[in-house]
Image (tube, rainbow, N blue to C red; front, side, top):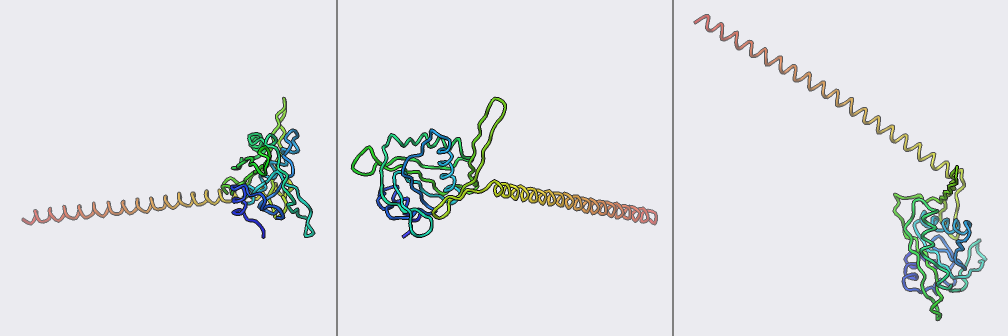
Length: 238
């Protein structure tokens, strides 16, 4: 039976990693046989891609310390066995530093090493990506390298799919950003139109109330004049 995020939360919290054996990697979890080798930018980008893919798809887990094998169904991997890694090979601070340098905005991620098996120096690296604040999405892969005269920027978008990580092409990213910007311009234009309409309405109401007040003032002066004329006529007759 496929594991959901609740099952994976329990496994990670209790260190019950044996439950992963025989399971097929899916949209909620991925396993690695070896720690990411952060000596090379290729590995740093791979880690950033994997984390952002889960962050853009509602959350998930990366477990470091398992071997996999191909399945007969589709091109997915089945967890074959646990191969715990030495605690010295899994530096949480280093993982966080890579995310700081390679992702924007930075997602919330819990990174820890958990002892597993009889050897207390061996265990499983757990990278937990909880569901993120939707207002921060999308989480983009970025890498800025500043030289003496120029700045080079790399950008990418990844999202986790069942059993794989899907990386968007630059044309798709461009189209998505273009669509968003066009929508923003249209929405802003509508707000400006509404604001202009409100201003015109306020002006019309102002003129209406001004005209009404002016008419009331003239009517009052006419009544007062008629009263004075009536009193003068009465005095003349008397």
